[in-house]
Amino acid sequence: MAETGEADPEEVVKKLAYSFPIVRHTDMPEEMKEEAIALCISAFEKCSNNNENTAKMVKDSMDKMFGTAWHVVIGESFGFGVTHEAKNLLYMFYGGSLAICIWKCC
Image (cartoon, rainbow, N blue to C red; front, side, top):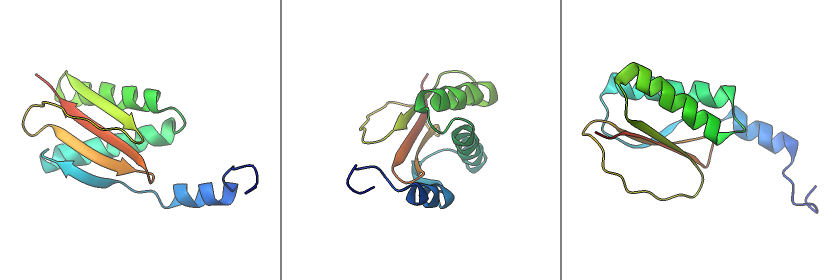
C-alpha cells in the first residue's frame, strides 16, 4: 500500500479510535462549551465524511439552543480572524488534524 500512497485501513481505524476533542481556545461559559463540544462530536459521528453537512448540523443546533447568528467552520489547514460577541467563541481540534471554529456574531 505504501507504493500507491494510500493509508493502511488499520491505521485509519486506530486514528478514529483514539480521537478526542482538544480545546485550543474558548471564552464560552463552561455549560455552553460542554454542549458545543458534545454537538460537534455527535455531528462528526453522524456524517464523518462530509465537513459541510457536519458544520450545518452544528450551526443549526447552536442556533436552536443559544439563539441565532452562529457560524461554524470545519476543516484542515485554515486560518481565520473573526469578530465575535464576548463569551461566544470555541476553537478546537477533533480527530487529529480537523479544526472546528464556532462563534456568534451580532
